[in-house]
Length: 448
Ligand SMILES: Cc1cc2nc3c(=O)[nH]c(=O)nc-3n(C[C@H](O)[C@H](O)[C@H](O)COP(=O)(O)OP(=O)(O)OC[C@H]3O[C@@H](n4cnc5c(N)ncnc54)[C@H](O)[C@@H]3O)c2cc1C
Ligand code: SF4
Image 1 (cartoon, rainbow, N blue to C red):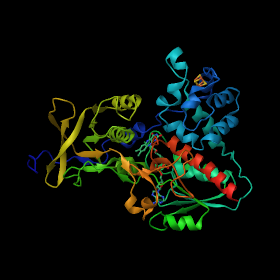
Image 2 (cartoon, protein in one colour):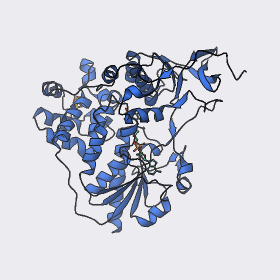
Image 3 (cartoon, rainbow, N blue to C red):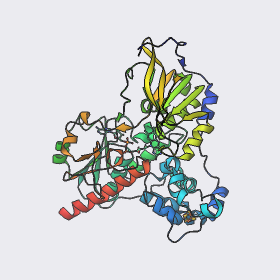
Image 4 (tube, rainbow, N blue to C red):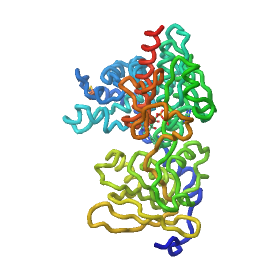
C-alpha cells in the first residue's frame, strides 16, 4: 500500500468560518431555563408517585417528587435543598445529565402522554434560583480535626470534599490544573453549560468552608500515594482519565489528526471562539458523547461537512438516540458499521481516512478530511502516577472498588471515571464522591 496518496487540495483549516454573532448563536444555551409559569405547569404534571421510578433511576437518588412538590408550593429554596443534599452538583447535572435515559425515561407520564415531566429543567429552575441568590444552604458539623486528601478537583473529588466538609472533616484537594471542576470546566459541551456556570458551581461548593485547594499539585508529580497515606487520615482518588485511546494506525501522529478532548478543552477555555482554527471537512471517529460533542461543536464553529463514523450500529452507540438525533439536526452526518483502515496522507499531513465496513460483505470507502478527530474513549495514565497503579487492584485499567467506593488498599477510596464499572457521567462521579465521603466518615469515627 502506498504511503503517499495522490495529492488532494491543500488542507483547509482556519479560524473565522462564521462571524462572532453566528458562533455566539450556535453556542447559545441548549435548553433555555423555564419561566416561572412554565415551571408551575410542568410541576403540576407530576403524579407524585409513591414508588417514584424517576428517583430510582437517578444515580444520586434525588427525591424528585419531593423537590417538584416544593416548586409547586413556591418553596424554591427548600426544593434546591432537597436536590443538593443528594447531589451537590444538581445544577450542573440539570444541564448535562442524559435525562432521556435516566429519570425522564422512567417517568410514568411517558406511558400516559408520551411525554415525561421535564425533570431536568425543573431541577435547573430550583437550583438556579439558589445560586442566583448566593444563599449557602449547607453548614459544617463540628470540626473533627481529621484531614483527608482528595486527589482531583473534578465532580468526584469536589462532591467527596463537600460531603467531608459537611461532616466536619477538613478536605485538601490536590489539582494540577488552574481551575477546578474537571470535565465540567474543560470537557462538557459549551452550549450545555453557558455563562461560566461550572466556575460558579465550584465557588458555591467551596463556600461551605473546610475545603483547602492545592492548585498546581498532582499525584505522581508532587506527591506519591504512599506519602499521602502517611500524611492524611484517609485518601480519595478522583483523578479521572487523563489519556486518550489510540487507533493503532500508522500516521496517527501526523498533522491533521487530533484528540477530540484536547480540542474541546481549548474550545471551552477560549475567550474568542471565532479565533479557533476549524477544518472545512471534519471526520469524527467514535460513538460516544465526546464524539457527538466534537462533531456538533465543529459544525457550530463553521465546519461545512462533519461526518461521524462509528464501528457498530445505531443501537450500540453509547450516545443516546436523542443525542444522535440532536447531532443530525445540527447538520452532522452519522455513518455506522465502519472502522478506519488507514489514513490517507499528503506530504506530512493526513488528508482523509479509508474505512472498511464491519458487517459481512466488507468493502472500503474513503472520506476526505481537513481534520480527523479521535473520540474513541479515554484511559487512565498510570505511567504518570508514580506507582499508584501497582498499589491498587485494577480491573480493565481502572481502579476496583466495592459498594462504598473502598479500594483494595486500606485508607484509600476512589470514584468517578477512574474506577471500574461506572457510567462515565457527571452524576455518577458525584454519587461516588458522596458515598466515599460517607464511608470515610464511618471509618474515621469507628477508629476514633
Ligand atoms: C467531552 C466530554 C463530554 C462529556 N459530556 C458529558 C455530559 O454531557 N453529561 C455527563 O453526564 N457527562 C459527560 N461527560 C462525562 C463527565 O464529564 C465525567 O464522567 C465526569 O467529569 C467524571 O468526573 P471525575 O471527577 O471522575 O473526572 P474529571 O472530571 O476528569 O476530573 C478529574 C480531575 O482530576 C484532576 N487530575 C488528573 N490527574 C491528576 C493527578 N495526577 N493528581 C491530582 N489531580 C489530577 C484533573 O485535572 C481533573 O480536575 C463528558 C466527558 C467528556 C470527555
Ligand atoms: S415518575 Fe414522573 S410523574 Fe412520577 S413522581 Fe417521577 S416525575 Fe412525577
